[in-house]
Length: 420
Image 1 (cartoon, rainbow, N blue to C red):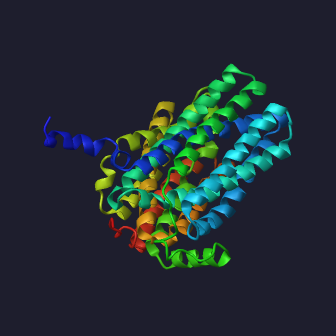
Image 2 (cartoon, rainbow, N blue to C red; image 1 turned 180 degrees about the vertical axis):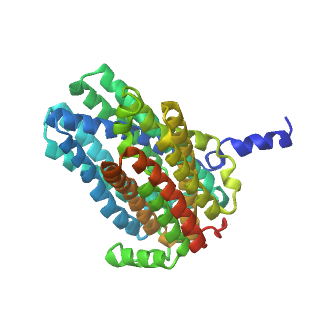
Image 3 (cartoon, rainbow, N blue to C red; image 1 turned 45 degrees about the vertical axis):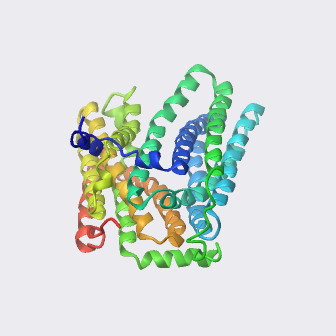
């Protein structure tokens, strides 16, 4: 086959150039992929254990608060720390905190402690470790790969993350199908603990990663550093708009809170709920595997805007679908668009911000990514209580598409943004 014949295939299939060229990135990607799979197993096991202990969905709901609050607080602080210290060292410390909380979950399950309060505390500690590590983990990508490879590296990360979001719950379901919770819970936590060691190994093998260029990083990691980061964000319109358009997409068009009611009342229950919850992630995985073209797009801001509009419209039409297969298909299309928007948001952030600001910008990114979907759940549930699920779901999607277009027209800095 000639080079000309091979070129279209490279444009369609996911670009694996960063994996081939950079050993440090390859190890990080490998470790992150397996640790995220384990994390998703724990994300199912913890609610199972909480309900088994309390038989009360209120306590299960408290797990979300226990996870979200530390994530919002420590993401901003973790971003400031990432700009002030060696990022490899920060990753090691924060990863050990996350790993230690997973081991504690395993030990309390083996010991039969049966304490809902302890479970909440361990989830909060785990969330704290994740919040501190995420900004540093994302901020180092431009230091591990070439500039033109950053979109491909982000695509690989998001694709494996979404694959974990599909496979992790399935693996957890298999574990609890085989064993009762008394045995299944230790097995699930053990899987997470073992897989997370791969992330520790990959982090240990990283080269030293001093802040900035070794001279220009933040001097401290306190409140002043966080304020400096927010001040920089306020003076960089393309970053503000990239965050704003993501908040619009998640708050107005995230239909997740409506899935149980729609599955039961519209699609007859049963397996419908599983298909609804997995559809977006499945679409993101398919989008990632066919994303070879993403690296070659220069007008990344315009592509981000188009992807958000496509997300909103696909979600809206999924809310109007009367057949389960059509709803799942449209949600998968939305998931594909979400993958594209996530890659370009991350790439714009990593390349528009200087290295000495990347940690703090990644902290804001983490807070937005964590908070947006949860606010979207609140919005969807509140609207459904007043106007019903169909209006809440479809109107939110159409509104997200319209607002995204208005933002792009009123503030054109984003759609004018080229690849740097």
